Image 1: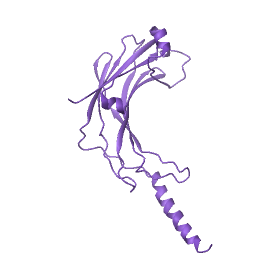
Image 2: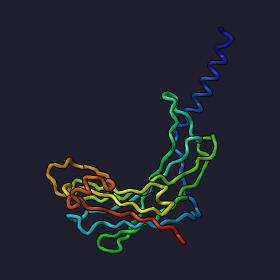
Image 3: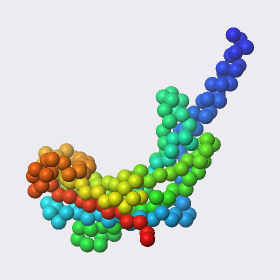
Image 4: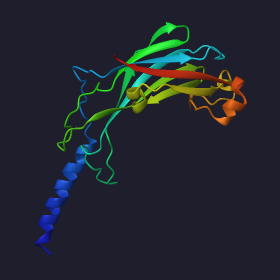
Length: 196
């Protein structure tokens, strides 16, 4: 049994070192020459019940899990993620346009386990009205394939005194509730278009 103790101690030390790397925040760099450019247009329904104080957007990226060390306690493998602001330009009273790149972040070996490859997971627009933030989004595959998405939001959330402070609400697809009473909802359209 005594002869096994040094081996077990060495194994534990190696495992701890490898797993401990997951605590290190990687130095994420931008790709110096991104090529996969998409323009995303946000169009807000003319029937929206009030103005928005701000309209912002960001793109959300994530790496694969093969390049990330296992967490020491839980044994989980967590991918690395990164959020990048997207500048929106207002092109009409209720229309905004921003540019997103599928290959914006540079693939790198952060933990000595192989190259972490980045993927665009989503494009997100946030429209703030009073205490409520309305969130519309496209997933990365929709951006890459140029697939538009229409989302619906309840008009009642505008200027509602009972809405909890800092409420965030995501858009919903065309549900039965929307079909039954469309006048109670406003919509947004997110349309991605790649460079030709």
